[in-house]
Length: 316
Image 1 (tube, rainbow, N blue to C red):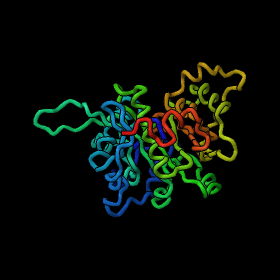
Image 2 (tube, helix red, strand yellow):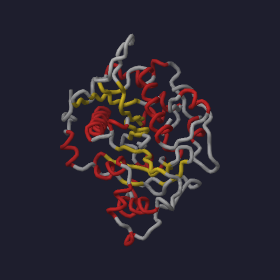
Image 3 (spheres, rainbow, N blue to C red):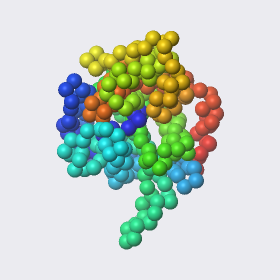
Image 4 (spheres, rainbow, N blue to C red):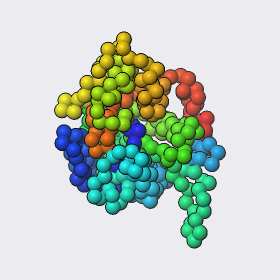
């Protein structure tokens, strides 16, 4: 669910800063499907369009080439625009890659008005993406990505009757960062939730910067106004835990705090999401992460009505 919603191939070592998030350790537990045709995006060939607004279309990636193009978009946003630190392999590939890409569905927003290139077959441009990992797939292949930062096991064990979906690696090409593209991404996620009977969405979302003191205002605002109730709480791993309660509630300027929050996190809050206990500094990506927990039952009726209880608003 990351607002850089991070990193197709086999696992490889990642460049790490001392005391940082050990993404490589959880990637090592991922057991990618033995045969490529078993990867989720192969089955997506049978899934129709999940939404359309004008020339923009939301659907799942249907081939390895489309996954690679989504990874290239992620690289551009996370490494070239933002402050993620690329290791040698990532620099050579110029794609944001990790082992989880093999076991996830990749939601795409595609622009069908991409300019034609002489002598080349026209390919619609991928302008937005979100990575989706269902609980059954995660459990068969080493667990959720967010488990490298947060102790998600107690929540999963306490809710065995619910189906969880992890959102991550979200990003949008700069000229398309507008309401229309974001609405289509969310329409695609909502369609996917309904398609798979998902009950709860989880994932990490990021604030730029690795100094919690400089992020004291937004972190404190989230702690005081959106902290998850005990039945939905997820705590950062002890060795990564950063206290979010840095400013007393009475001293928090809510208007200024909202202004400093990334649009993705503000969007989650408007819908009805909770924030887990503790932040995590991710030196590789130059961010401070918070845990998003969004039960479908908690989603504001206003938003369900907006997209349609059957995801029919932007249906193709």
